[in-house]
Length: 123
Image (cartoon, rainbow, N blue to C red; front, top):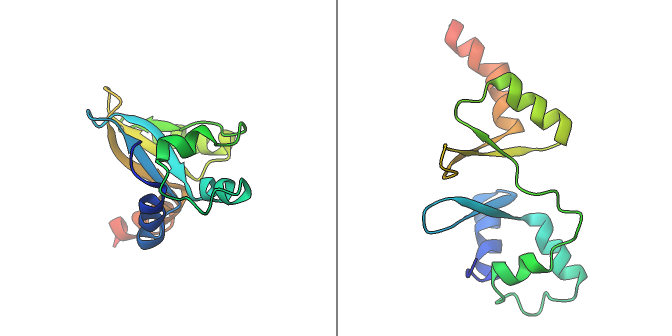
């Protein structure tokens, strides 16, 4: 939460990702900073001071932010796909039973698995 926004923007661009999970000292997922949040700062005229912290930037986030969506390593593919369909998501953050971040599963990951994962296992 204390990381400067400019550092997170660099992570987004260098990692070619659209979001960065925010975790606490115990590695528990507390929020997410998305590329779209940068647009909110630009629209708000704050692009001149990107040294503000992610925490400060998140306080300026649009009220229509729906929150961070998670799944667990024990969720079935069917459950994950159902959550993606209902919520119109592109990603779910995978957490363990303590809420610690384990990974991220994206719609692209799932489509790749469906298209190529089963074919590879048959070969």
